[in-house]
Image 1 (tube, one colour):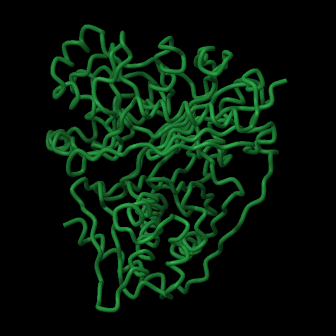
Image 2: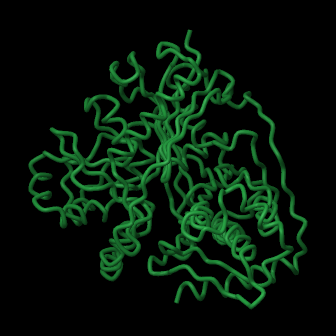
Image 3: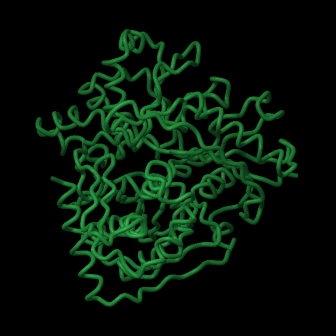
Length: 492
């Protein structure tokens, strides 16, 4: 009897593993934080081997915690931090360099060069993306240029490229499968989202050998099999999606027009746009939401680079709080920020500004400003950045309705109420805010026959909380005006 789906949720700051039962309920969770590496200004790296070991340890720990046998696990679903780039030796399996993280801005000058050549439309028409260091393409080119002898080895077929999902699949299958799913491929700036193929023109322009790229597979289907020596039995891998697409699926946003916002390390607002890609005129990204069978679903996405990471910064770098949960209590200890704004542009600004050179600022400080003002301003900044993205999205597709939220920071009631106030719309928070993990589980479970179809998934009803706006329009406009001034300072 297959009782569980194992979801591997490999995030930017931690690796989480969750076992879900037939009712879509998490029966066990294990999580490991791992090392963040900052070798230079705006540079962010991870140790790829530590990514895998932290994820594997979490998976084994949750299986042991629940007391499950590997034979009871129907399938594995994988979801991951997107765009993060790993190159490794095909024969030894050893990474040739640290993983370059999606937040890393080291290729900003390279991207600016392509923009000055007038190539923005060329890339956007094919990939749905803007030219930005955020995506994998220029990270790969940087590695080929800066790691001695790597280009020659790559051209000989000795090197493999993968985003984090691909790396995990390769490791879990003992090197038998080199594959990524369409959602992760669509975030590399190398994948044509219309033809669903690696784009030869882009590869030629960037000088990236096609032989290093993985096979692209659907988000739900037969992807590979975990080696028996890992969990004690072979377990099929049948689901894979980048974290934000997985969260969209996990929130059951199966219909065109459904919207979700995830508060993770970054913040990501996505709307399901159906079977046809929608091109934004307001700095949003066109991306693939998922592919099941032969059917592709597209999405429009706005990306905020620093959301929950701002709270982590308050804790780890500034020492203003001892835990993320404490931020809510501190924020509520004062009635307002009294004109203090924090713009957490620590790695540039994402949608709708797309300025890799922007840097973080705090404005409006007076002699009476204290710890609570800065903590509250950091939380409010998450909501303001989301409001910027939502405004851009509404200009592209029209007024949005209720927004479903998830991710770690969505547990903060102060933030959710403030978000509802600033957006002037209702916010729905499900009982289980780990939508990324359940999305990967749903995709895996569909392919494994654990759930019969999306109708059965829709029938798995859980409780939720609703936040409705109470702020006056005058207050809202005043605060948004102050935010715009603060962003102007960060953008200079």
